[in-house]
Each structure stands twice: as structure tokens, then as C-alpha cells.
Image 1 (cartoon, rainbow, N blue to C red):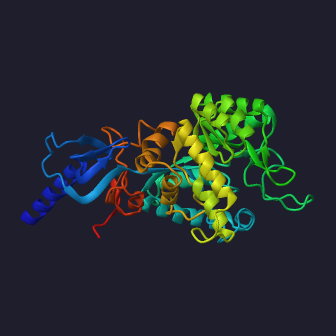
Image 2 (image 1 turned 135 degrees about the vertical axis):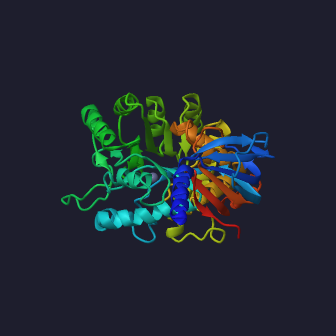
Image 3 (image 1 turned 180 degrees about the vertical axis):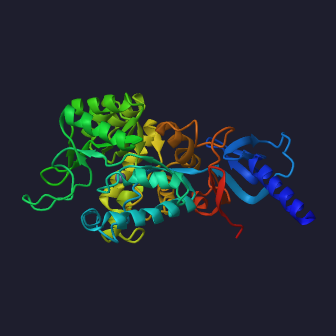
Length: 421
Ligand SMILES: [Zn+2]
């Protein structure tokens, strides 16, 4: 009987414990708070939120477990600004074959693995910019992650993305219609309907291709007119969302900037005039340096051995020009073109192409959160934001490669990875 009472007492106590707030204290060598590197800081997590961040001036709730992170830097969970969780590297399977020959089941199964790899690499949020033929499956993937059915990052999704008729692939022969990698819509009426359809299906963002490789010599040329882009921005913004564009030509970048988009993806051929305009209109650049590097490597370029391809030299120049002009720089690599989990490659290239490591850390945290409109939730180590926190060995503001040495991954207050080796 006494045993029974004790058991009853313990289970009641258990229930009592569950109802209690859960605290964790993190003690690293230094904290990158999303803006500055801070020393002498600790971070107290309460349930899924950051309760305190700063010097240990507060009273610790009794029994709070302490995680010592000696030699490590604590950072906000990294934000991947340009991912495609439904794609995998093109040297494994070409983009055409992924869109045309892989079943949706296969693509989803792969995306589940990609989501896990992304989270374990310290990227606790992704802005996923198009399922490339996998319809609205990003919305489903986001939902199963939110329901804790599979591990993965927070997802900001754009569903199918929108292209002008005739511009996008895959392209078979002229008399053979294939599935498209994005939704085609032209003219203001069709664009309005497509944008609202995607919003209805769960899009957090709308992505439009303002240019594409459909010129006479397969070079990039603008697709949508200025009026079409302007209308698309108006319709998207009136729903409280942001519109982003794929653009590499100065003309499409200019049209998009004047139309009021939030970010320009790629921006390869940006000129001084365009970058000045982007700065003036507060349009950010997500340069996706890794995409070009990866594709050239798949074509046989041996980096460090072969001569630098002209495309890379040009990309370096335009990126440096954007940085010098003061354009807001997001961090996003177009991951999917290269392996998920290797997201840090973009951060390393941003440093290689001329940005300071501390600025790259800002891009991957607070800048992305601000530009994407999620600053009230993620991107900083700050009281009341969600506890998306990582720890890496060493100091990534001195050597950006340290961002790969992930020792702790916490998302929404839950620890997904913790290692001391
Ligand atoms: Zn992309």
C-alpha cells in the first residue's frame, strides 16, 4: 500500500514537473548576438524562448541545468536565405531529370533527408524558393516539421514560383509539352490569380522569375514587363507578404527594384547604377555565390588548379560592387544545386569574395531575419525571441570555417544535437 501511495505521489509529482517551466543555462566563451560579438555573456532558455542574454546578473531558477560550452561561440540559429529542399545536386541527377523523372514520393523522401541535414548543420530556418515541379509539397513538409514528425528547419515557403509562359524549363521538342518547374502566368489577371492561389495553398513568400535564359542565344533576358511586376508586388504586399525575384540582368533587376520587390536572387550582372538603385529602394541582394561555383565544378572546373572561369571573375566583381555600394546582403546559396547540409559553403565564399566574416555572420542571422520580416521571432540572441541557438567550436568571426564545427543545435528550445568531441 505504501508503495502504491509513493507511486501515486511520484506520478502526481511527475505531472507537476511537466507543468513546470523548463530552463537551460548556456555558458559559452562568447556570444554572437546577431549583430556583435559579446564576451562574458550567458544565455538562459525558458521553454522555447530566450529568457535572458547577457552578463550573469540575474537569479538562476533553482535546479537549472547548465551546459558548459568551453572554447565555443554561441550564435542565433543560422538562416538559409535561398534553398530548394526538393532538389539535390545536379551532378547526381540533372535538374531536367529531377523534374521529369523523379516521382513526387521520391522527391519528398529526399526532401525529408535534406531537411534533417540542414538542421544538423546549424541552419534552423530556411527560405525555400520554389519546389521546382513538386507543386505545394513544401507546405506539407513545413507542416510535418512543425508537427515534430520529422526533424527539420523552420520553413518559409514560396510553393511553385511564377514564370512567364515560354521562358522556363524543362523544354522538350516544340511539339512536346512537359511538366514545368514553376507555374506559368502572364498578364495582370493571370498573375493575380496565380499569386492568390499560391497564398491560399500556404505560400509565405511569392517568387517570380524576372528574367530567364530564353534569349536568342540562350542568354538571360527579361521576362515580365514592369507593369506585370508592379501589379504582382501590389497584390502580394496587400496580403502582408513579400515578393522576391530571380534576376541576373541589369534590366530585370532594375524593373524589379522599381516595382518594389524585397530581394533580388542571384544578381550576377548587376551594375553600379542598379546597385545604387537597390540601396536607395532598400532592396536586398541574395547573391547565391555557391550556385555558380557548383555548376562550373560539375562542368569540370578544378578550383585552385584551373584558370578561374570568366563567370566567376565577373561574379566576384559584381558581388564586390554590391557590397561597396552598400546594398543589404542576404545569405543564401541556392542550396539544392549543391548538397543540403553544406549550406556553410556560401558563407565561406562570401568571405572569399571580399566580405568580413562578422558581416557574413550578420547576413546569415539578423539581416536575413530583418529582410524576410521575421525579426520578432528569429535571427538574434535576444530576450523573448525563440530559442533557435547553435554553438560552434572556436570563433567564426576570426575564421569563418569554424561555422562548420557545430557542437550544439537547439531549435524552439529543443536540443537536436549536442557533442563535445
Ligand atoms: Zn534557386
